[in-house]
Length: 349
Image (cartoon, rainbow, N blue to C red; front, side, top):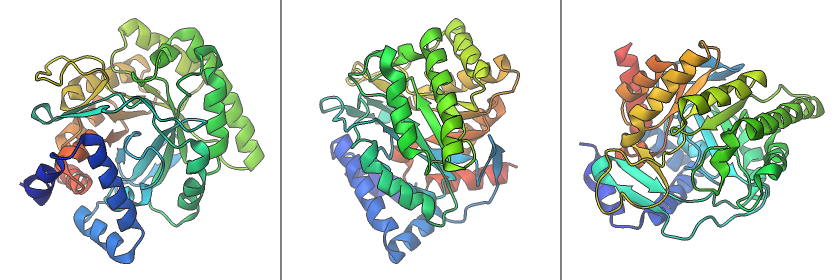
């Protein structure tokens, strides 16, 4: 049992979940800003195998990244990279500041190794994040930086494309790739953007803007990934893939949190919101398999959901994922998790 599991998590478990997360972010921000702090983060990570992964024209230093939602305001990407993660996806960012849904809105289910959240994209707005993204992009770094794009809660679906474009324009010079979040269950009607006509219009708009911005800044076109829900039917998934392939989107992120509660018990199981963690592991892997097969392996996939071990990562790679992200695993397994997983994969090879 690790020091984190024996001593630190039991202390954090007595603190309200979102407050504990805020404390974690503050500690990471402090550590990444000092020589001794950075040394401590490297010590916690341990030796990190160098095993580059090439997808969508980008060279990721290893297979493992942090999913959107952990670093909503783009504050601690360097600290997470020092812990061994090869890429960090910040956000989801919206055009204007947004408080999100009322608290409490984040719940631990330790017996299931899960979280339920109904955050609702709380963030300071894209303008507040840009200065930090600029600093991250200009610093010497060994990780890739993704930005998750979202829409304002009150924006109607027919006007959603303008919100995504606004965030895209603001972060474009600083992001290595862009993730289009159309699947969070905690923003009203947002998952409906995965439906055919909405998604087709949104993706066509973003692809055109991507080309325009690349020319304006004289940089390589930023890869676009679409983040999908685990709750799609086969027919809905086929519709998403048609829109994605027709618009030559660079890849899929599978998956977001689920509204399902299969196998989840206890007093918090009925809380509204998206479920993440161990109960999502099999469902997300099944979606990865379906995307891989239905696209004939043409779409790079970033697999997310229920990742806590090297075996979990390997299962998603075997299902068709090129990269894997985690979030909830960090809550229960602690900051040394990335290093343990990556060394485990190296041994498995």
